[in-house]
Length: 325
Image (tube, rainbow, N blue to C red):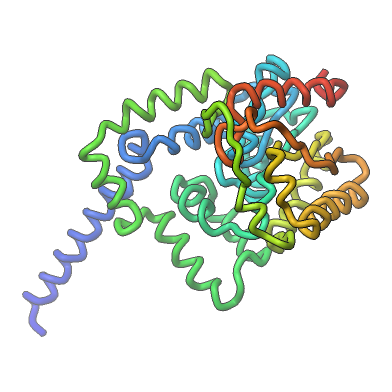
């Protein structure tokens, strides 16, 4: 090999680094211009968690059922919804960790998760939480150490995480390409402002009613919880106890048809899990009953519409009134 070849390789490496650097800057600094509209809701939540110093007497966390279903302003002026679509107890633990680094601890934390999403972290964890840079390298390392991935999966998962963390072009090229043909900034700006005004609450389903079964619940005979989600459930409870936060674990409303078609085994096993949490941690409050609602509360298969969210939030306010003062 001659010097010209090494010069060529050197220039090629520089070019690759330059292109990679452009992708990294665009992915991290210009997200409002390149990502779909769900990004705006995530970014507004992250900005509030990491930058605001505002005190909240009541805080709400969960996945999209909590983000859509609990309206902060109907509880109190100092209530905020920091739920994130697709979140699990993993995101809850680290978002609360970040929140407590910037804010005084709330008096009360309401958490609520989709009943059928306890057996997997795959989709949203990779395609939203890590894609939108919600976790630090140290936090991801802890997740790995706590057993999120098997020995066979560990190396692959770490490599995948590094691709997101280092903004690998193969991960972010599709968003940049699609953004060239859409005005995503204006859409995201509007969504961001809506999230600010609503104190983090966001609707996903807006139909006036939803009648069918939620097949992601009725299609399962047995309730299962992923070990890593269970591990972080306990870590979240302990986090609240250490910070003097009254934790309330609530159940999201499901329509009558879904409840009627859930297997008896699933119904019992899920509530047994909730009852075990209540027994192990007597200081927390756990709703160990299903919230069955009429179809006109739901805007889609699992999310409350405006009517449902309003009535459900007012029910919560009455039910937990002493913890909201």
